[in-house]
Image 1 (cartoon, rainbow over the protein chains, first blue to last red):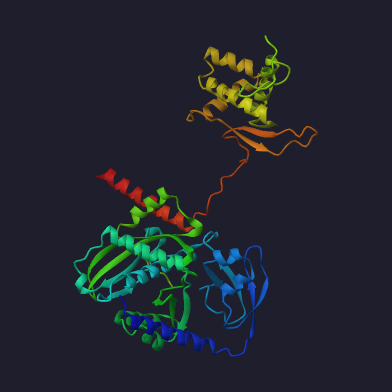
Image 2 (cartoon, rainbow over the protein chains, first blue to last red):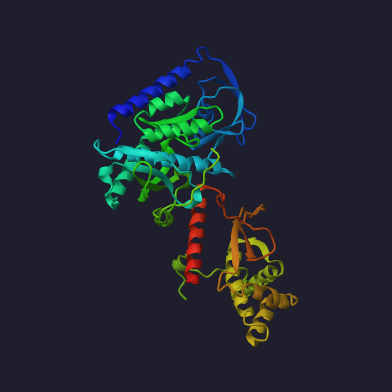
Length: 298
Length: 167
């Protein structure tokens, strides 16, 4: 598990950077946000620059928009729901039941994998170290989301039993019940390296991502007291998932950092709940090792 | 018989009375059934549609025996008052329902009639008719998360079945 010091240190750096970015807008300036929602086309909202998020725009509408929107599209680009808007733009809120929910599905899969990584980090005792390597971009049709992780060398011979998988599931359900928002923050690489100073592979990932991104910045997400790195936008909050189960942890073999393991899980949002017979069939499929994955352009 | 109160209370009696008597009831049902075979979708009162359903399905069962069968031809002759519908019954409706064992008709309730009687109405139709559907089943979009997961599941099962067939 991450030592308490590195957890709080990462959080402290994140909060500091968040406060600094908010202080860049000392005076409230207004921006105009045009809504592109079916039924409310062309509605103009006057929001605050650098402070208002798509979530606050949804709160100006009805409660249904707040609970059901998972991702926002700002000028056609996917935008996390809790990221502040910086200029006048057009906004549309995406749910799970749209005519084209591909972006939302992929973001949901990524968020569930990030949640799995968080649960794994918290699950083990202080003596054992857990390194999250990366979250492979898996297609939704492959049946399960995965999180690659390297456990402490003392646990090389450990294989997860059903009871341990169930306790991991319970940990994830507790996080879901707490309904924590995934707060996004765009930072420059030095700050990100400071946040992940305890983990070498995370630092490498930060360098990779900053090289790939056009602006040279890296997107961090905070959930509760964990700070994560992600390949693309995540959904608004953990409360959107309803059925969540950790299905398997497969060993992948010796890798760069030790024995790589792939933790897999299955989840569905609360608007698309499955009957228990359907859930059982999907779950038995999610226990098999997911080999094919595709790197999306995010 | 003894004239008692029980004769006026109809608790538990399933046989409906229509028209002037039993013969009138059969004639009315015959007319409605002829209209159903001609138009394949008709609108009547709820009670009549429910009664005709039984006879419509039994008529199809008889038609499935083929037009060479003596009993089937007699039945069709009796029940269809317009005789140009007898070839339609044997040549169009019977082949349509060859694969189905039962359930050839569908009844959907509609708002009450606008007349003074405000009768409860229903639409009765033979399945497979050429008109647009009465009630479409609301299906979720194919691209939602759960449908995509199920699609992957179905593809994997198909792959496994194909692999089993080869081996």
